[in-house]
Image 1 (cartoon, helix red, strand yellow):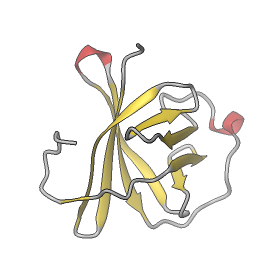
Image 2 (cartoon, rainbow, N blue to C red; image 1 turned 90 degrees about the vertical axis):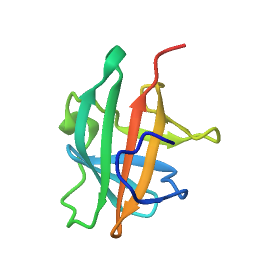
Image 3 (cartoon, helix red, strand yellow; image 1 turned 180 degrees about the horizontal axis):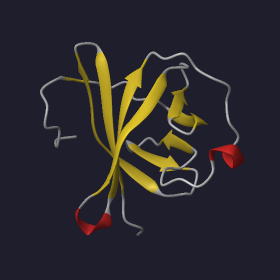
Image 4 (cartoon, rainbow, N blue to C red; image 1 turned 60 degrees about the horizontal axis):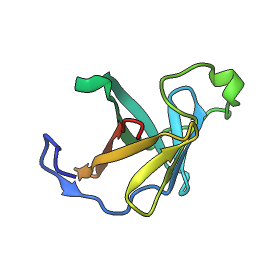
Length: 114
């Protein structure tokens, strides 16, 4: 995890799972909310998403049908090799996971199909 443009404390306790709660909120196994702040396509058409862990008041959960089509999957699960596997069976690289002034940011990048 090297490509972080900011200086912060590297976090090694990554969420095991991220579930879509509603269109713009994911929850981890500790019931912490993660918001996708930016979604961008990089060189070689690699999709990246920057998540920020925020304390928010949660509304009612939404079903995948209610959430509708999205560039982001409904679920990510952390694998032992440090990558995330999403509900559509794609793999995502954890680019960085840092904490600055108590705020966690985590950048995931979609890996090309093998």
